[in-house]
Every structure is written in structure tokens, then in C-alpha cells.
Image (cartoon, rainbow, N blue to C red; front, side, top):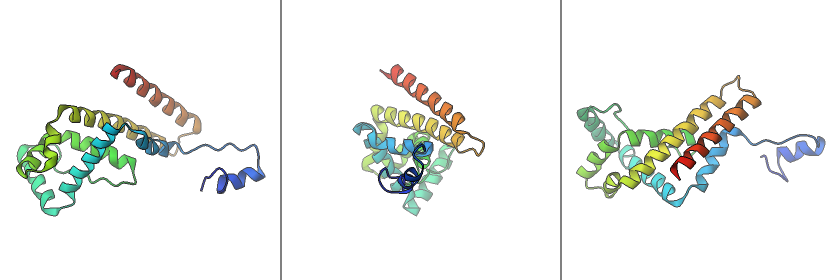
Amino acid sequence: MAGKYTGVVSCIKTTNLGIVHIRCFLHRHALAIKLLPPDLHEVIDDVTKIVNFIKARLFNSRIFSLLCDDLGSTHKALILHTAVRWLSKGKVLVRLYELHEDVYEFLSNLQHDSASKLTDKIWIQRLAYLSDISAHLNETNILLQDNKVTYFKAQSKIIVLKRKLKLWNDCIL
């Protein structure tokens, strides 16, 4: 739709050469997941498998909810991820990180292959990293969706987020 050679933008540019085309702020980070390192992408794939194993089967979902209730967890269920929305993925990562000990208990009782992932400290650190970053992206995304946000306010919020990401990257390295 917004193609460089065909689409709405190219048609508008033929009539008005001075127009500037700007990609939507809200969907840029959805493209960023394609550039994730393989080890982080593997964590996202594992999270999707774990959540789908629990949430896609009603019996597993109910048993997991009862287990969380017995263990006194703050949450009683995982969030099902929809592949379309980055906000959904971020919330899934955060919730799984918050419940990773309960999920381990559940999966180990069923002798599921993914239970070993939840005891791997490196895997848990990567999950924590992804959940933190996605939480900040979600927060920025929600701030950008306000109906009173101007281009300049949105640009400043994006610049602040980029500076935070650079700082976090420098702290890691």
C-alpha cells in the first residue's frame, strides 16, 4: 500500500513532489524482531511452544491455573500470543518470566521437553532481557497511540527510547 514505486504514496508523490513519506512509528519495532540474533529468536520460539502447549489445551490450562492458585502466584494463567501483534508478544514474554517457576513445576510434572529450558540460567536471562525490552517497547507504543500526540512529541519519545536502548546495550557489553 505504501510502496515506493506503486501504491498510495507513489500516486500522491506524482501529483505533489514536495511530500515527505514517513513510516508509521508504531510498526517499526514489529519489523525489528526479524533482526534478532538467533539465540534470542530461539527463546521466542520456545516461549511460543510452551505457552501454546499450556493454553491451547483446555485441560492443561485448567490444571496450570489450579497449580498457580495453590502456589499463591500473582497470576493464574499465561497469555496466549497472537502472531500479529508485538504488544501481545511482549505481554506473553513478561507473563512467562513472572510465572517461569510455576511453569517449570507444571512442565516437569508432565515430563515435557521444554521443562529443561526453564532451569537453564542463560535461557532465563535471555527471557528476562526480552521481557524487559518488550515491556519498554510496549510502554512507548502505548504512549505513541494517544490521540493528542503530535509528530514532534512522538519523535522525542522515540529518541528517548533509542538513547535508553543504546545505554542498555553499552551496559551489557
